[in-house]
Length: 342
Picture 1: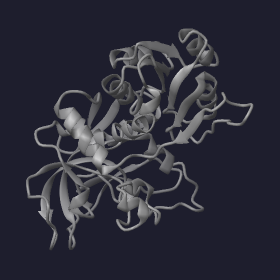
Picture 2 (picture 1 turned 45 degrees about the horizontal axis):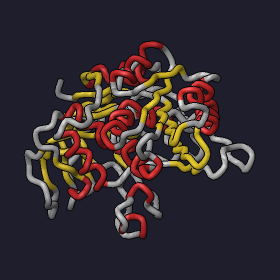
Picture 3 (picture 1 turned 30 degrees about the horizontal axis):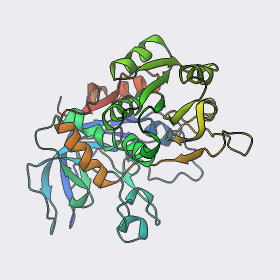
Picture 4 (picture 1 turned 90 degrees about the vertical axis):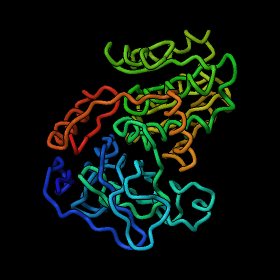
């Protein structure tokens, strides 16, 4: 079968031929119907060889949708032919975090398809247990695949700070791309907050408006001042940074109001300077990693109701390397999705 693998340090991924996997005891074999691309893949491929935490080579792809193809011995809970997406946070299942449903924070270390084990950028993949599968019914798998990260990650981030987003509040979304364009929709659905999106270039700002942003502001050195202007000098109640570099972290801290909240989500490797005199008083600053399986189930229901819709660009697996190039160059509108059967 065809698969997109990271095969050599410092190199771009490769389209290769590998053997179709066979499910072991308790495992599930999926025929992949769609696989979303994520900037996290770019982060993995930028790691130095020393201390690299994953196997090599490794099939990429941690946003899978598929159809149950075969069940390993003893696997129960799904049937052959079921259309599903894959909850990507595979914890130990027994530590305190896993017991609370937060497998993304597993104390023994989480792995994920494409981030520790072979992922979904292939014609077939193995899922370790049926409990990591979420049925999607008649949802379009191309749009449903990215519910597993592009929607789940901002949803979990927003849920953490909902008490700040009361009537008359303002939320800022820095980066209206793969995650940010879903965050805008979620904020409009879950809250009455005024939503201000920050990004670069007229095309991306217009996209943010299409997704529901009340205002779209160029993300530059003057962005925080513009947000203060739009909020009567007060600042935003919550700022979500989906980019995660030093300049956006600085903007987030400068744009938030006293006693507001900053949520750092992007994996750009940057920081936000926080201190007694370096940030507004009593501000809450936190990171947020992925989300829970329960939240993913909620998102599937929201998608069925038409409350969120992931904008996608489709590529056949033969064009997967072009998809990664487009992602790297910032040319993807919404989420890039590889469709093996196309």
